[in-house]
Length: 403
Image (cartoon, rainbow, N blue to C red):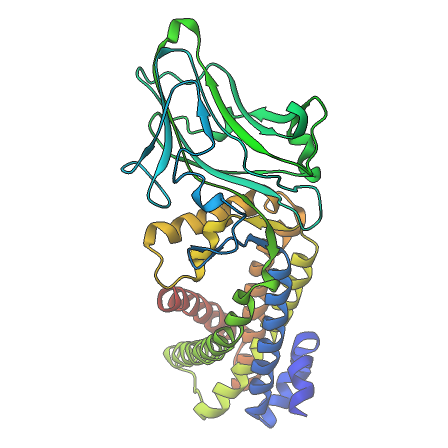
């Protein structure tokens, strides 16, 4: 009987709670816990299937990087510029150095690296992104006026190019951390010169220009430069390593919520001078209300499955790095929020899922009302006051104690 009542609470709560109050069985809430853990694990799988992450970095360390990329900004080899090119061991982001160029009394600065081999950005397993850090300095703080360009060289003097203005920081002397999509899927973001091929990318160039009236001393620095591949989170060890901790957390959170919720409702009932009755019976009956959580988890998983893939930059590895700094964790969080806002937030599917939590809150209050009314045989008005007050207190306690 208790197994049937777990589900009947959702579609026929009056009959369900009459049966539960008559024969309260803790096996019901335990079954709900098991179903929550199973559906949560499935939902995590769905969510992970929608995330792809750059795989060169694992817990903050480069792994299996393309030949030479780890050293691209560690020496001046293969770099060219219209100015004085050198390495900078003070102003750097990754490794020991950044690459910099200084141009004096000019309106134009460029840096390019060639002879890096041939990078295949065409195949399904090919490179899908180019990541870099860039900083520019104009002695008078003037923003580049035109021809702010990023080029990707191919064979025979051909190349892809795109405007760089939206990729550099608006603030002078500030590092900008950027990732751009490359390959056939990203062709709409690039213009072409002399029919280049994504199958053979042999170098790249950063270029900035100013008006003649803005002539001055110019500086450009590049660091943390590499081509990246995106791999499904399911194919990394991140997903498997989070399953057991997630289950443990799920068990703790369930019993915590159950104890707080039932305890608050008991206190509210006693405060209004109503008999609580045997605490064990009251506790078990309130546990059945968490059947709503199963519906919420399943619906969220279904909605997420309909959303597009999110591609996360390599900084996201810091989310699972126990040695990550607060700043690195903040960057990782900003990356996720940015991708969600860009690709998910405008979708009605995502918005519906965000607002459904309020429906779950209302549903929980309604079930609490029916349970209290059935359990103590008090007026609907007093039962509603207990249910509303109890849920409000529970809501704030949960947020305070669980963060």
